Amino acid sequence: MAKKVVATLKQKGTGKGVTKVIKMVKSEKTGAYVFLESIVPVDNVKDFFEN
Image 1: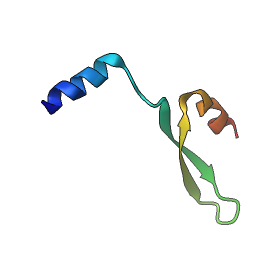
Image 2 (image 1 turned 90 degrees about the vertical axis):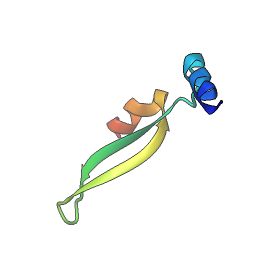
Image 3 (image 1 turned 180 degrees about the vertical axis):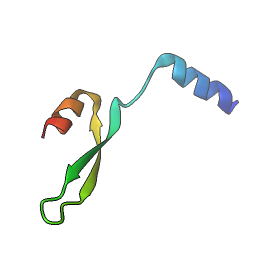
Image 4 (image 1 turned 60 degrees about the vertical axis):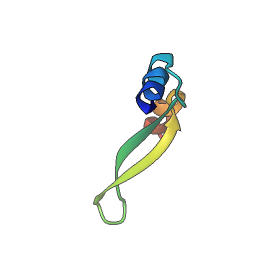
């Protein structure tokens, strides 16, 4: 029965509209690379990478 529920959700396309983004940034103090992870709405992905 659980399989039917999962299949139904995939067909309807109901989702939150968010995505996980990971950005690699060089640290000014150490010079090492740091990874910034965040969950942002799909509409704001470009804004995240521009900043």
